[in-house]
Amino acid sequence: MENKANFGQRFLAFIIEGFITLIFYQIILMIFLPIKNPSLTLNFLFLWLSLMIIFNLLWTFINLFLISKLGGSVGKLLTGIQIISPAGEKISFWRAAFRNLIGYKVSTLPCWLGFIWIAIDKDKRSWHDQIADTFVKVKNQWQTILGLGVLILVIFLNIFLGSLNYQRIKGTVKIYKEFFNSKYLEEETPPLEIPELENNFDNYYYY
Image (cartoon, rainbow, N blue to C red; front, side, top):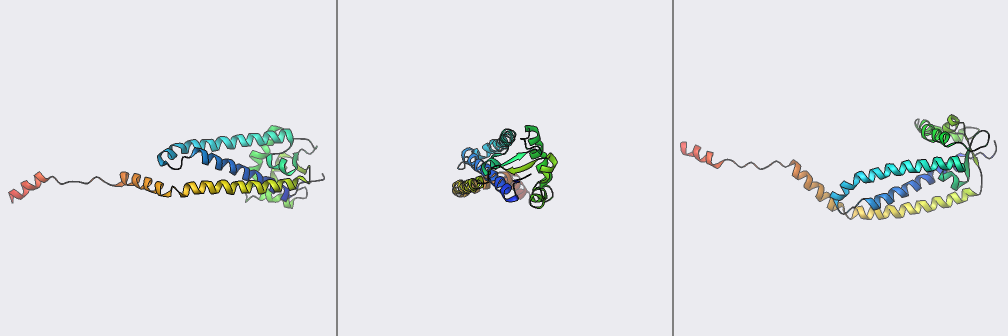
C-alpha cells in the first residue's frame, strides 16, 4: 500500500487531539470551580469530576463516529491521514471501537512500544493497527501543514487558559490555607478540660 502515514504524521494527529482535550478540561475547570469560595469549591468538585468523565465518553464517541464515517479521528482529519481496512475502505464503528479502546491499551502497556512500532514496521503499522487489521494512509500530504498550524493554535490557547486558571488559583492560596487550617484545628484540637474546683476545695479543707 502506498502513501502510508509515517510516525511523525501520526504523532502530530495524536498530540493535536491531546491539546484539544486539554482545552476543554481547562474550560470546565474555569466555569465549574468557584475558586474564591472553598466550601462551594468542595461541593462542586464531584460535579467537575463527573463532567470530565462525561466529556471523555462523548469525545471518544465522536472520534469513533468520525472514523467510521470520514475515516479518521479529529486529529487525523486535521492532518490529512485516514484509517482504512486492507481493502482500502473505511472501517465500521465497532471495529474502530475495538481498535481504539482495546488495541490502544495493548500498544500502551509496554512503555508505549506499540506506538513506537510505527517507526520500525515496514508497513508503518502500530500494534493496534495489526490487532484490528487496519492501515493508516496519507489522504492529503499538504494538509500536514494545516495540522502544524492547528497545533500551534491549540498550544497558545492552552497557554492562555492555563495562565488564567493559574492567576485565579494563585490569588486564592491564602483563602484555602486559612480554610483548611481552620477545619484541621476544629477537628484535631481537643476540648480544654477545666478541673472541678469544688472537689479541690474539699481536698484542701481535709488536709
